[in-house]
Image (cartoon, rainbow, N blue to C red):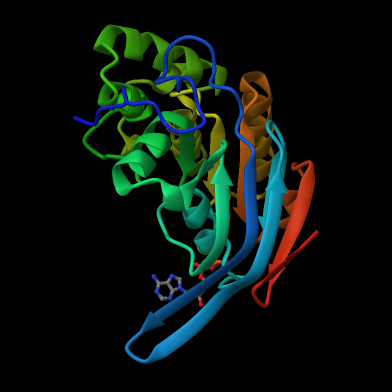
Length: 246
Ligand code: ADP
Ligand code: MG
């Protein structure tokens, strides 16, 4: 069981799924370099990347496949260290936190939507959606009520008991969005969330994502190679050749 009781630097309280949404996070990257080195092979993915995302802002990171979008999201999530530069998330400097604090920050305050869904096949839609609440010790009944309400908001009222394999791709994507939002995260990171969807389903998913984020005041950082999805953001940045441009 992961303990979320410890306070993090720069934050008074971090909601673990109960009560009001945590205050939206700002994200600030300064002069970030990222180099992957393995077996004598060196890949410089990011060079001098600066990014300033205000609390509640919805930002899209676009760029071709291999440009470093996922790397940038993983860095912001504290899943990948930078080679140089500074990353501030919700007032905390990630390099000043230890692994446990970064894990706590993620669990309590960051929701992540993965391109590949990562749903657990043996659990229902509702059980998948509320997993983050159960991990932070919210009682099952309370978690189920919150999950049913959120899935209802996302148009999945009649799919609560379905296994992932009994859901369409668009429905699975919405369950992933619910799982990312259920803890009322201050920051939502979405990595190619519409990659498996067709045009109309992309519009549906992005409308839901934007509406859900606005309602909760989440900051959103979306990585996508799809201009159609990026159009829903307030601000778009392009990642190319390791540099980020507005
Ligand atoms: P995008 O999400 O924009 O498609 P990625 O961030 O996944 O791009 O990858 C950017 C570059 O970094 C690619 O050239 C990829 O091969 C490389 N890369 C990503 N992860 C690793 C890793 N763990 N080790 C080595 N190289 C990696
Ligand atoms: Mg990627």
